[in-house]
Length: 352
Image 1 (cartoon, one colour):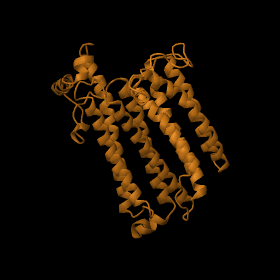
Image 2 (tube, one colour):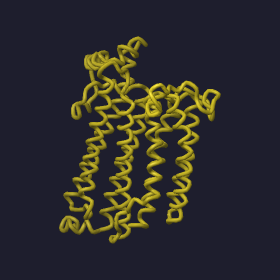
Image 3 (tube, helix red, strand yellow):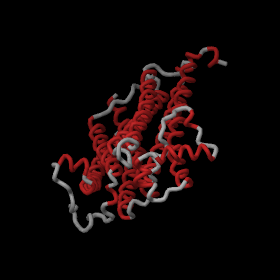
Image 4 (cartoon, one colour):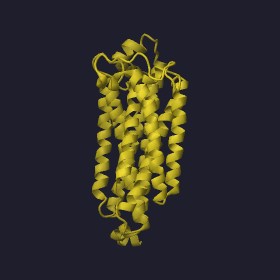
């Protein structure tokens, strides 16, 4: 009865920021699930199976044979079908398979937006949003909407012209935007947890070492997205050498080094596999700082995540991009970032 009689009092209770943080962690978890499903969608070449953006009615999949045929006919008009899937003999049954993954990916996005909007609205009605967090939550919601738009722009890049897949750069933008949003949700949720423990706690600040470490991780995530978009993971299934050479043969330097760094499959594969060790060195150093700042658990999480990721990365190469391992590699990449954000927040609390 107290919460109904005095809603403002709810916002001052430790349970309010903790409950709100739980909502943000849940939302971040849904984004993580979207990243995983997005990896399956990419690897099964399912991303262009839905050719229209219908945010509301698109939540309902085809229910009749006629509706399935209509969706299949729309897909048959795409360059991907005409040049790749059609000649390969895709049937309606095969189309249903790729449609399922893209539809599931988009459905998760709808659920995520609904969970966040309804949840935050409930806290707003109860006046249980702590001071200083309202605009942060609005910004997170806006970023979520923009992410949906970025996703559609990515799809459009594979429906127009003669492309048979989406633009690697729009693909990377879509993934990195999602990971940025997940990180922002985790950071805000951790700020709320601190507030729940101590009503006088101030939001954590991003320290210099944390900024450098996150930048190193960001570069690797971007390279990974480019490797995926350009299918560069398939050019060599050996490690540590690439087809018998430390530096790969076949790099096209004809358009200059910058073009090669952003387009050449061999060079992208090479840089991605060796920048990983820069990431490892940076994370080992940063994890020690995190531990000295008082969080052994965050330090262990960082070490566990990047150690697992290195093993998976090598396995992806040596198995010829075996789908379950490749999906796990993308998932753990997101966990490397999440654990680093956790560590950055721990360090940031010391400078707040």
